[in-house]
Length: 143
Image (cartoon, rainbow, N blue to C red; front, side, top):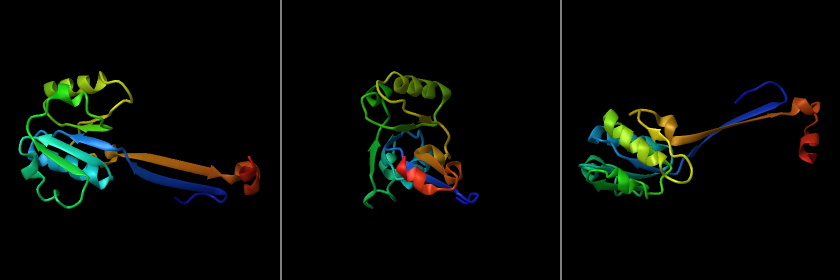
């Protein structure tokens, strides 16, 4: 990113890791899966008709597994995931939110928006200001 003289700015996006996509319908599941894969994540998609809904993506060497069935929030508690995507009813979302909140370990975000690609990546911004060292970048290297 451009900055004033003596300043260097970088912005990078990195995958969050393993994403559990729960749909609940085929169109929502497809949108969640595409966004998660585009960000570089591995995806486990669980919903009724998931293999058929994602047939265009399977078998292409993508980190994707599709399971046909209704997700069981209690079973999802034991899965090691970094993000959960679900856009169902408020009652169902409350159950999913409670299950992931009760897990031990790092906080797992729940993505409830159908289209929110930024939620599937970590954003990192780094600003290096050499003017704070009097413009002498060698002082930063010595520190």
